[in-house]
Amino acid sequence: MTVWPARRTVATNPREASALRVAIDALRRLVAKARVPSRGFSRIDVELEKADPLAFLAAQRPGGRRYVRSRDGVFAIAGLGAARVYATPDDSDFADLRRDCPAVVGFLARRFDRSREIAREWRTFGEAELVVPTIELRVDGTRTTLSAHVTGDGADALRLLDAIEGHEEQADVHDLVPEFAPGFGADKGVDSSESAWRVAVDATLRDIAAKSVRKVVLARTRTFRIAEPLDPCELLLRLTASEPGTYQFLVEEMPGVAFVGASPERLFRREGRKLESEAVAGTRPRADTPEADRRMADSLMGSEKERHEHQLVLDQIREKLAPLATSLRFARHPRLLRLANVQHLCSPVAATLNDGVTDAELLERLHPTPAVCGQPVERARTIISACEPFDRGLYAGPIGVVGSTTDVCVGIRSALVAGQSVTAFAGAGVVAGSTAESEWLETEHKLATFERLVRPA
Image 1: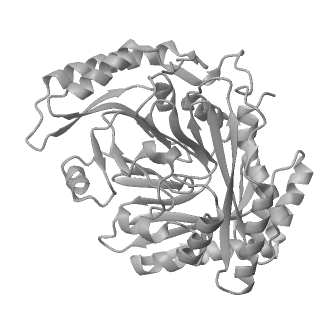
Image 2: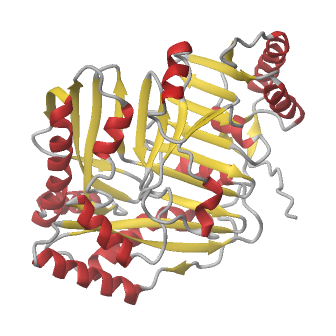
Image 3: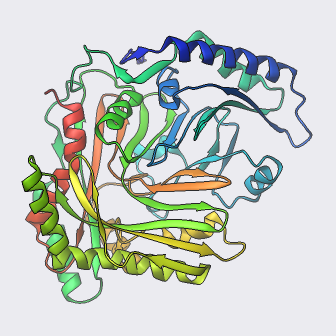
């Protein structure tokens, strides 16, 4: 049996730790006195001045942890345990629960391709897509709440609250200790086969030339072996520091196995009838100097191939949203989305939805986008299944929260943590004009995020 070390990677924030202990004690007393209604579910909230949900999660024992942070950082939520589990977001029981308790949100994690057989490495994540946690720490703007979702006699909530009280103090992820050295001591890593990649890209280009498909996004992996078992929160803490301005997420079903990422790409954000989405496609690496970086950006903006790839994504989003919306607005020209290692073309899309449009409808229409699959979707998905020798699992699937405000990203720039291995994923869009060499290099730039985190400096 593996003993998972509770390694301190960040400094303690005494003020936040004290406030959190007070909130936990207050919540425990309320849960102990709670009278759960006949529907068998109750939400209990305690407000506190300030706390960091990711630091809170990092201080807990592994197993059943979830985390989502919005790209702008205004919203972040950490969850422990599972009070309610639903197969899909359109489950009628979840709709009933939200009507009874509007503050409830569910953590969403959907596989990229639900029709594909689940590979062994992804089986721990199961079939369920939506989880309402037992304990939740949420920051929404200036408001911070610690909440318990009480079911039955409340024993599950009390057990988790007792475990929180007995574990490490609250940590401050923004105050890294000096001895926090780069790298986890990983080896160089094992790549997907470059020769197999060339065969797949060349075959896809023949399909494109035959006009059976216009774009296919092929992905590859790199697996690193780590010197000792890795708590995925450590990896996410480092991603947070290295990739600001991204969605951040963690999905952990059992100790030692988790999916983590820092995604630049929004699938959609819905608040009432207002919807925001975007097309993200077309890539260049970042450069070491401002002058070289500008040249890379100019090359991206001026590339006919990259603009074509980007337009395919934008056109499909507009096509899919048009039947659901009373108005649809999009940028006339793409802008640059700059990240630590790469920069993309990005076109925001805004819509006013028809009455009654559900999150489940939006997911079915918008996922997968041509940015992670291809166009047309079904043909591209068939090619992906035939060419890729691995199950994508949650990679490139929708990850986020579903509630009164639903915010969902595309699960890219991500990795599967399993014990002493970290498998990172990266994809590249193959269109007319692509070459196997250039697309392999693009995935190299995307994999660099994890390369720098897990390998020694």
